[in-house]
Image (cartoon, rainbow, N blue to C red; front, side, top):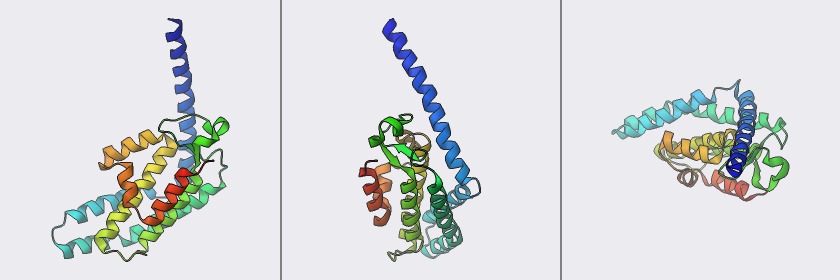
Length: 203
């Protein structure tokens, strides 16, 4: 009974600390997103790409994709704004746990298992701009495919920072029916290579 009560007490304390920690991260990211329209633009693009893919006529498909050019540029610019803005935060405030589960305040006593969210956002900003500018000369459908993956990975990173990697993985699977590994394989090599180096880097 004593063991059970001790375990219950540990769980309650961990749950309280986790909730407080996650709310701090959510509030931090929310402050930097408050003057942006990223969520709306991303929703427009992901729905638009899905609509375009369903078009059976190739000409019509191209026409649909072309209508989102302005929104794509807006998303790239706003993610860059977010990445620049969040550089003002300290490493401690912008640290995220590399383990699947949330470990509250790990940056204070286990920095080796944390990663820098500021660096990750900078990677997303560069990678998304690379695909928006079509540096690889992709056709419209291929470009839309890679842009979708870039947006999904960016969204995954934000959920990871705010909650945990496990939660981010689950949301990616539920909302987009795709795994984190598949998304990582589908982004540009610019994003993927930088992301993998960031992942392997210790704080």
